[in-house]
Image 1 (tube, rainbow, N blue to C red):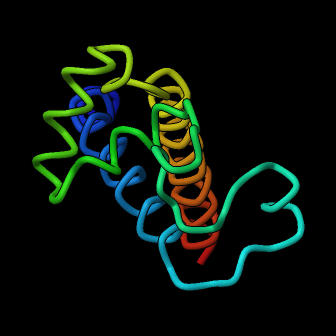
Image 2: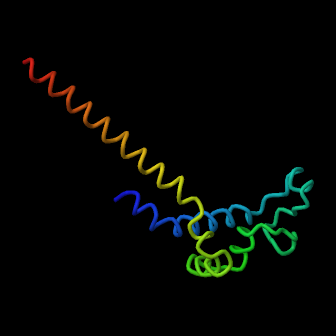
Image 3: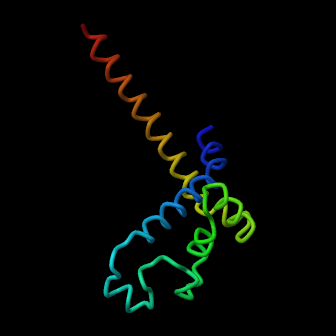
Length: 117
């Protein structure tokens, strides 16, 4: 069930991460030396920077969460919407297995402690 939930919500997380990355990149910080060396002006404006990074390109044109989702779907398709789905599902499965094993071991330990008394 968790793996299915991770799969279904991946596009929403991709959009959330893109929106957050855009808002972080457009804050009014002066450009660092590394940004100047890379030809970036620190403004977050992908077109002005001639940056081909699809993440910047998608979020630059979008004004809302839904706009970002629609633009991402049109420009990058399913592969863009489901970027990172495999590690997310793997993490969910591993996390569930660890949680289940820990629960069972703890339950057994408590049973042994209270059984002796």
